[in-house]
Image 1 (cartoon, helix red, strand yellow):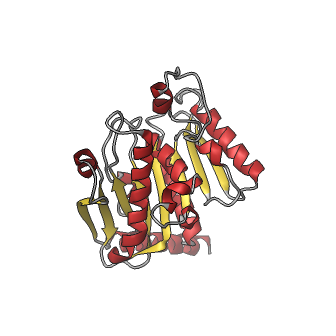
Image 2 (cartoon, one colour; image 1 turned 120 degrees about the vertical axis):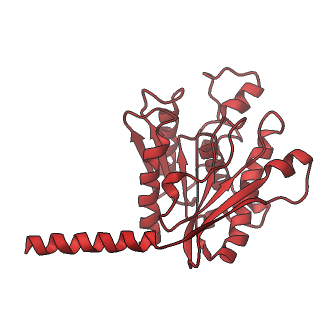
Image 3 (cartoon, rainbow, N blue to C red; image 1 turned 45 degrees about the horizontal axis):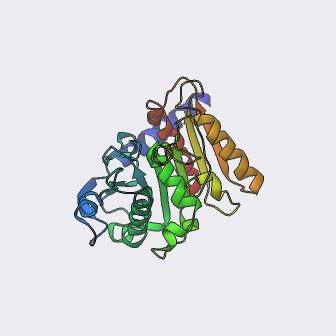
Length: 269
């Protein structure tokens, strides 16, 4: 009986893997999500779409790269390839060539583009997730918690299936604080802090952090406070994960496992 069950599980897993491997994926690169603006904005405001060809109603992850809001470039994470999902990899304007408002607005514009366009590729507007690492996690938090950024593009932030920030700021971003002459060890919570916008009706929030002893400048602790205040505010679906043994940079790879588990849970797969 046990042997038969094991064989059944083996064949089921093999069939599932074969089905995933049989899906063909396409990539369309450097699609502008802005068509007007200054030359720098037109150069940076582009995205790549990675999607399962001939798929229908698949989930989509909008992915924002890290780099302290002053560096980095779009890429499709290897961990999100060949798993039945579409990925929208986004470039956004970078400091000091723009303001922090521009960075956040670009993130909102890219998410709005996804809501308005993903069905052309076979995806579903009801299955759009937003995620990113470090600066990308901060942008994820800002546009998901402060609804005004997406409202500009006639998108309700609460229609996002989930927010999944990897090691993102919950307080005001350090690059913004530096621009105000503040030390990196001096925290602030103002209009550019996701913590400023804790609310009970936000999309599901899955916070992932590296090891608290190895993260950047208390990044775990500020996210733990973010998690707690969302719970105190009455939010019913906020989670936090601390990845022991992983620092700020290395935590991203294992964090994708958490992301995919929650995406499957939310999609009922």
